[in-house]
Length: 594
Figure 1 (cartoon, rainbow, N blue to C red):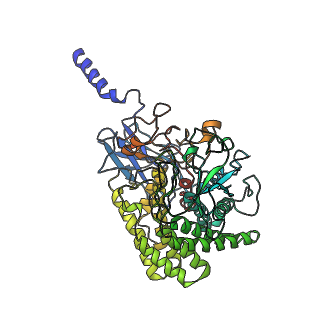
Figure 2 (spheres, rainbow, N blue to C red):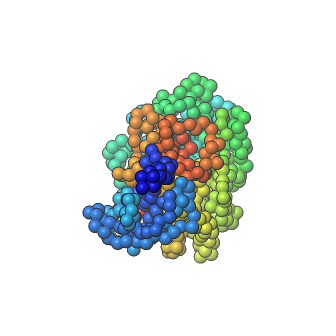
Figure 3 (cartoon, one colour):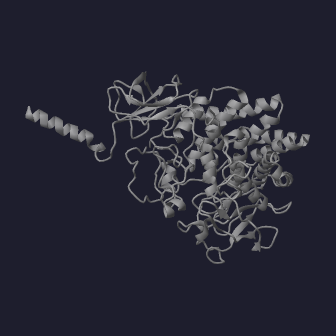
């Protein structure tokens, strides 16, 4: 008997050895760490290293009382390191309250979650965007980059002084891009249009405490609009980028920028003119065929600015400036159809946007809405047919920021102003995209279908946003589960049991050790920043200069083919970004509805 007992002990030891010292459980539960609105779909997932004989989840309230038991369904696909996945649809639960799940006759317990309205996280997103301000930064109450900048490639002689101060820093670095800032500004404006009553007025135009008669979301939008106008200083000029990757010299606070572009550290920075031609001051050249992506998107954003700000008497003059510039930029886009990309200097990474008709469609639709001139509507239809359903959602992979923005707001804008045939066609484009995502999601144990390229979280947010807009356009709720699954992914229903948004939700695992100077230098935890997100391992392995600063806390949960790290040294998965966070604005505005 002792021989048998000793050998059984040895066998048990060898079976458990792979889990020793990792904190890994044989079975885990994943839910949305915040919870679910009462009327929305609800799914919990079980992950296990072995086949479960009794895959039942017991729902309990906050007092530990059993509410109901749910039988889980076996998923068709699995992700390493777990070999078995199960899902539970508990959408029937609509009673507001706090709950958690336990595996029946098991030791796995979920994080607690809430059924009810979401907090007003759209305000936290606005607050995060405000911390990215350049020129004057209210977060640290200091000025920075007052010498922006000197023009290059433009109509003026190289090194001509122009005023490109203001705008937002792009991410953990301190570059400024019209590519992303135009979309960020538009999302601020569209979120306000969506639900004006869900935004507060607690800070002034500089971002200091104290109301000023303008909702904070519009203070931030106006900050973006003002910078877009600076990047378009005359009727035939458009600049698209301030600084380049010579910025990447370690973490530094904005007023202490140590980057040297040839005029000394913390001095002048280059401002790149949108020529419609490939650019670059070193061996890495951008690609370009025109400027219509930047001109069109900026025109649409300025038209939105006019539309919104004319409702505030103190901003009527500014609103008219936005309209005039929108028309000029649209005309520039018509003259140079094609795309301009971001510029790099010392590394091959840049914004590789290569679509433009969606931006011109968006601009034409907004200008038609403002002017009622039929030519704009005809242009909108033509550009809509040019871009069609083309989107990253039609692809199995894509380059960095290819086919940006990730939701075609031009189709949505045409749907709003067009006739019945226009509405039918734009709905069909959106539906084709979502069907592709839905097909991929059916082969994913978490129910998501976005791509795991660099900034994958932006894509997850885009899927949810497009599904939300489709519901508005059609009244159909057919993609609500798809929308919710991508929201769930961002809020913890993922391998790492972690939200992808800093400090959201409360009392849950969220990104902390992020690739941001305010964290690395001051240990500031800033709420509302969406981090880049998980990457396919094949992509992650090829990223330059990634070496974790500490042992991977998620090592026991990492799939073989997808990687995510909460580590400041992994800029590819853990860096909060300006436009990624803005991608959440309309979605969270929708979810915060009481």
